[in-house]
Length: 187
Image (cartoon, rainbow, N blue to C red):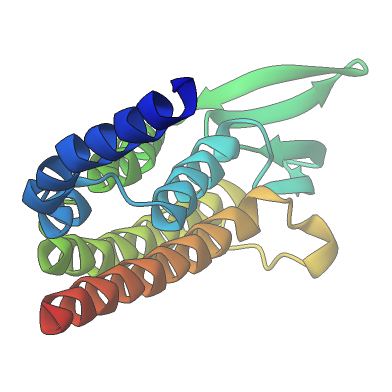
């Protein structure tokens, strides 16, 4: 007797759940989800820009015969074995903060993937312009001195790394777009 009640209860539970699962619109869920891997790529793109605050753009550069290090925050010269802050780049600091925050904003444009892709490409143009600004700042500080590859710091490569992460995010967004379109075709 108890086994028949158990099988009856299982059947009634599944019978109650079937109408609920039929009314869930999985396509709506897919359109409103925060994206997976592309969110990570955009996060890494922003972190690569913020890493410019940690790593120098150029080091071992001689300005007025004094070895100097050029970072986003300014110029540091060797004064008695300790780095002394000689010049501050306030506009470059503010620009770096703005360019670093933009990928975090792009993450939350997930509801409109085409718009998100467009803004990702615009962000790449912003990074290219920002990189040009960094190069011009370094050139103005060094007085047009040509730098050797040994003088470049890790910071000189971080904007390129950020562009690569944004391109990977665009690829992920396009894959999601294809997935949604194929799910629409199946319905």
